[in-house]
Image 1 (cartoon, rainbow, N blue to C red):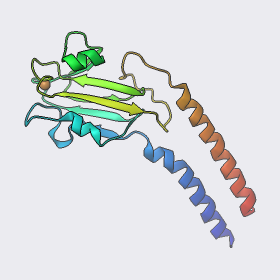
Image 2: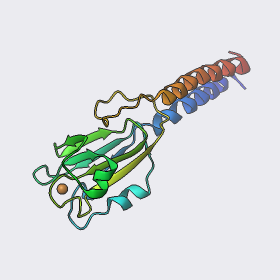
Image 3: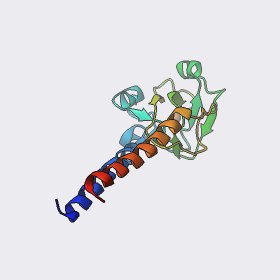
Image 4: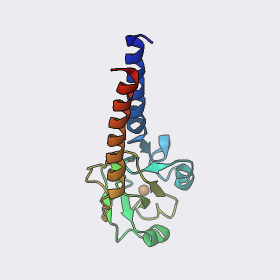
Length: 173
Ligand SMILES: [Cu+2]
């Protein structure tokens, strides 16, 4: 292998290593897709969420007419009962980006009377992340400092260094 071949291989190894985690981090999900956050046409956000895998670091985008809807982060019993009076957090801009900062269930309902009962509610179950911890302030109230993720991140950086060093040795750099 000539030196440009070696350089190319090293580059490929390096890019493949670094691009993997980067590409898998920070997906943006528009809740309801094109329909947005609404009661029109009998929404089924359970179905919307069902085929998707949500990760810490991903962003939920709620798009709606703020005169008719809002977004409440609620606890599970309130989600089940469509109770809008004890929300953990309220969003009402009509274009809310909510970054998922912890694993587990995140329950969102519309607080306008009757809307949640009509199906304007979504349970987003997030699993762990391969991404670096997010510093977004828009999380739920129990912000769990995700020590596990940081450890994984640190290990990846360390592993990346090892791979690059090994590549250099093997390729004769
Ligand atoms: Cu609504």
